Length: 352
Image (tube, rainbow, N blue to C red):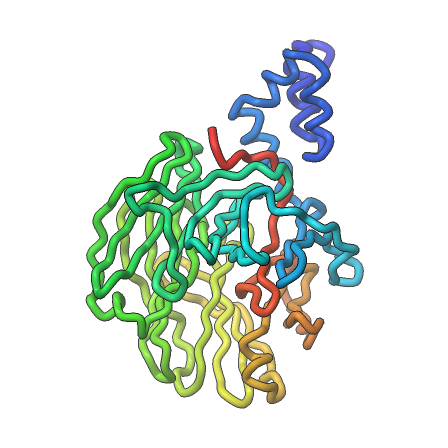
């Protein structure tokens, strides 16, 4: 360490400083301000921030937006801090569509506009343009947030409009949208198919595409973020006699799917993707009958070797997992009732 330049030592120390202390560090001197603003610093600081202690839960209801720490000892949320949206909205009509490295892609429901927002730094960026890019319609569109090999944060926007599919990519680096080709089966353009938000894992964005009725077709669409090529792979071989909900999650850069099936009793299986094929990791016993409204409200979390089935009302079940702990909270369905996300506090900016 004694042989290292002072600049290198300062760099290494500051990349380990908590996010909320970096604001004060920027005001120390011009050299530190410049250092903390370069992309290499942001990238390395982000990689060192992606730990469980920096995870937060953001919840939005009709009256408040709040951020909670996660208490791993009790597997619960800690005391909330009220967050004020830094952008114009109406009655908290903000939906969170995707999140990555502390950035959230959100939609203003009253205007359909897309934004990138870092709730830790409060910085945000409007993505909508006068030529109709960056407007999101619920139940028709799909969004995926990713970072490519050049460290450029991008948004993939899949639009379905009157049986016509349009696919667009927003680049943070050049601050603009462009169209890319995507040819898929015509039936997937129907509103009878539900497209999930994209899950970024290992250089690929993954979307589940599920038919809206019992016994329908379920597939996974893969988007290679560097070649910008799409392909389709099969769904895990789950029963199709009841409701099917497959939710994707990136666990330590390996793609997993929590597949919930059933009608009056629900069975949940955990699968992992190896190549283009799904391998079952575990099955849980059937969950006792619960109301349909509660079934649709479920959020699963994985942490510390246990699997928690939770709703906005609290924890429903704890399932012990006979496998290596994941050591983080992983939300594996979207929040319902309360809108929200689990995110990591970083200094990643929504704009350059």
